Image (cartoon, rainbow, N blue to C red; front, side):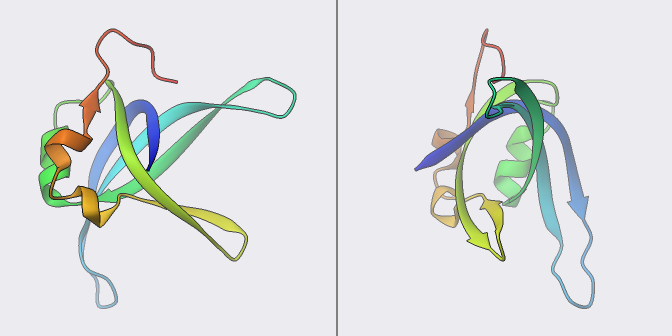
Length: 102
C-alpha cells in the first residue's frame, strides 16, 4: 500500500452531470524532491467516499496521511483512494499531530 502525506488544502463536492455521478474531493499539498534535490510543492486531488469526506471536515490546513493507489494512463499517473480502504477509513486516516507535512 502506498500513502500520501501532506496538508489538506481544500474539500469540495463535484456535482452530478449527465455523464458523471457526484463526487467528494480532497486536495492535498505536499513536498516532492526534484532530480537536483530541490523541493517542489505538488497538489493531488483525490475522490473520496462520503464517510471519509465527512471525517475530513474541519481539518483544512492540517497535516494528514491517506492511503492511495495509482496507475499510469496515457503516460500520466492517476491517483485514487482505494475502495478497499473505504470500510476501514477510520483506521486509514491518520492525522499527523505535531509533524510538518512533507
